[in-house]
Amino acid sequence: MRLSLALALLAALPFAAHAEEERSWSGTAEFGLAIASGNADSETINGKFAFLREEDRWFYGINASALRAESDDQLSANRYEAGLKLGYDFTRRAYLFGTLRHESDDFASYEYQSIASLGVGYRLIDRRATSLLAEIGPGARRFQPIDALVGTPPVLTAFDAETDAIVRGSLTLKHRLSPTTRIANEVLVETGSGSTFIQNDLSLRVRMSERLALKAGYELRHTTEVPVGIEKTDTLFTTNLVVGF
Image 1 (tube, rainbow, N blue to C red):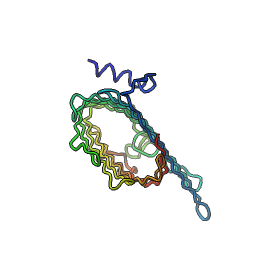
Image 2 (image 1 turned 120 degrees about the vertical axis):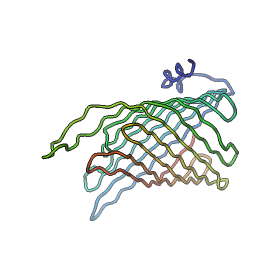
Image 3 (image 1 turned 90 degrees about the horizontal axis):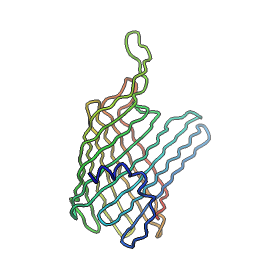
Image 4 (image 1 turned 180 degrees about the horizontal axis):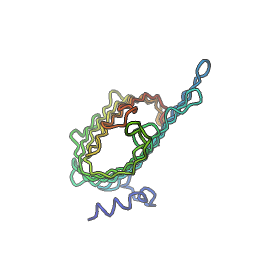
């Protein structure tokens, strides 16, 4: 099947050398840094990158993000994530897609998790100022649980990596409030027999020039099943400088 073959070659596609005029690409890079010193020292760094290329009915992209925070020389956040996506428009509103996502988080209920999924998407709203996309499809998740205390008395126990089948769904809303201001919200749900992962990203972007913008973002991540001592919900507020290209 053509979609399956294209998904396997996804990592190489963005770097293929083509020059046809009908192809288009876009991307953004953003960076935020907060440093405090005095009675308490803290340092937080976060960055994101996203790239999208379109050619005829095909589109594909790559994204990556990193978060690292220290407080009084103690690491309090350390998360890295990367993703790939390939899609094919079979009508103006409907499309097929395949995604790969991998993340590593030192403070979550897992050391890492990798997700691969296929599915169908539909543009519920497709206007110049507003867009609303919905996606759903099956997938597989491979994750490495962190060591946890088990038994009485409790003993620190290491667990093997696990694989389960999931259903992936997402809903993405983008709206232009003014010529220079845009708001966006994306909800991602990955649910399987082991647990359900929910992520919500809300952002407000204000353009300062053709290439530069300021962005405020609020991210919520929730995992339904976690070991004792691990919070189910993480939140993150960021203010970043965004460069478009």
